[in-house]
Image 1 (tube, rainbow, N blue to C red):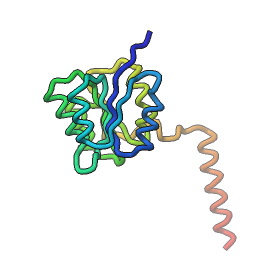
Image 2: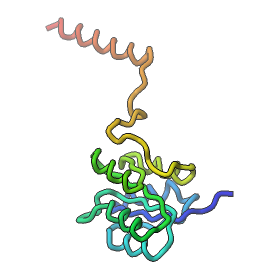
Image 3: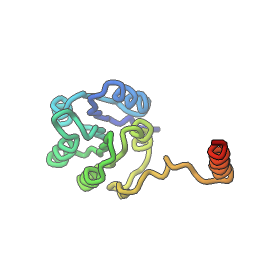
Image 4: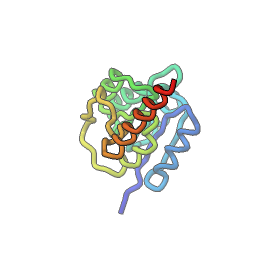
Length: 159
């Protein structure tokens, strides 16, 4: 039997907030906020298992919510994501006890975070690119590259 977890999502973009809700609606009870102030109020008034926050919350930073929850000794886990890859902010989020994801992957990864048993902290190196996005090499892959090069040489020699 899977227990339902309480998740607070702090995301200014309504479309992404809806995708995050849809990704975990069977597994979690979700509260969503579009700004820092209402997310802070929810975070301090109710117990949550997860705080999922965008790094950019208008004039505030999503890490402020993580620090606030840590100072209040809340038992929530944290998932911070960002639009752009910023290694230093990712490391800071990891030092604060949060897991870090990119914005384009967060709706896919959130269900895995809720379902899996995770280590105490995110030990991934944020300076390393996500290898899942890199196409794997194979004969077909190299054949297509070789074919494109031959086609380019043939078209270049026609001039």
